[in-house]
Image 1: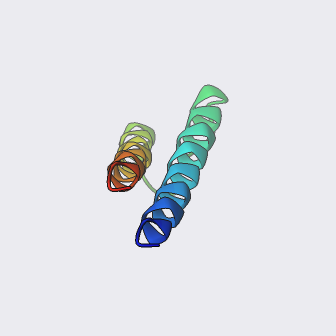
Image 2: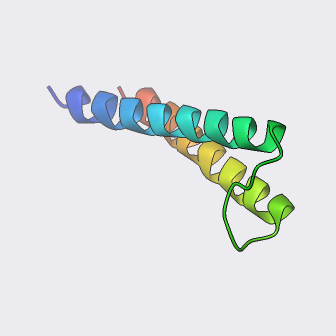
Length: 65
């Protein structure tokens, strides 16, 4: 019963991280801005780091099961 919150949190982090990385990659591939008002390289790097961090948290949550 204690593993249910870890699985839920891992699924949420995993979906968010994968979605953010896919969205960032699609925007960067089409040379569209990832964030308005920010330099393109900075916004891609920060969004990519946030997506990778969310996936790392998902792996950690699933490791707690």
